[in-house]
Length: 287
Image (spheres, one colour):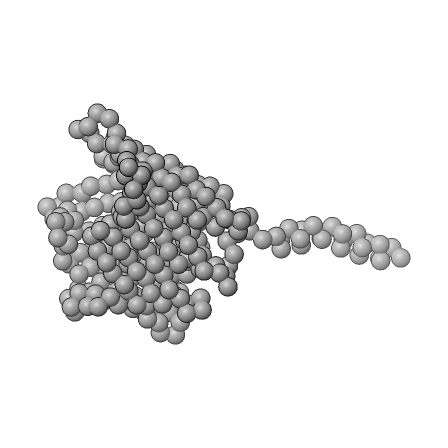
C-alpha cells in the first residue's frame, strides 16, 4: 500500500511539469499559415499610398516556389529550384542566385550572376539556433550610382531569440568605411517572417534589390515595435539617423496583418528631423 501511495504522489508531482512542457509557445502563428505578401507603402500628406516595396510568395504545398520583389526601382520574379529538398538556385531571367552549403542545413555562401557574369558573392554565418548572425556581400560589379564594394551586416540576438541589434559596415571603392547600427524593440507577438522557411534565400534576394537597407528585419522572431538607427564613429555611436515607432494590428490568430510606421529622419545639416509615415501590410494563406 505504501508503494502504491508513493507512486500516486510521484505521478501527481510530475503532472504539472509534464503539462507545462506540452504548452504551446506564447502567441503562436498557426503553423499551416504561409506568408503570401508583404507591402510597404509611403503615406503621402494627402493620404495617398505610394508603393515603395511589394513582396509576393507562391508555394506548392508548404514549399516555396517563387519570390517577387517589386519597387519603383526594380521588378524581379525569382523562381526557386530545389535539389534533395534544398534550395540551390533562384532564377529571374538572366539573373541567377545560387546557394552553397557546408556540412549544415543552412546555406553558407551564395552567388548573384547576370548573363553568366558574377555580380556579387555572399557569405553567411549562423548561431546554434540556426539564426543568421552575419552576411557579407562582396561586389564584383558595382550597381549604378553606387560606390560600395562590400556590405557586411552583423545580427545580435537577445536571450529570448529576438534580433536586438543590427550592425552595418560599408566599404567604399576608395577604401573608406561607413558604419551604422540599428537597435530594435519588440512586441510579444510574432513577426510576419517568423515561420518563413527560406530566410537565407530571401535575405540574398532582398539584398540583390536596390531598396533593402536593413535585412535583419527578416530575422525578427517577434514583431518590431520601435527602432533607433545611429551612425558609428570610431566604434561608438555618434549622431542618430532614424527613430521609428510601429503600431501593429493583429488578427485573432496573432498574425500581424498591418502596421503603421512613424519615422523621424535626422540629417546633420538639417536642424529639424523629417517625418515619414509608412503603412505595411501582410497577407497569408492557411490550410
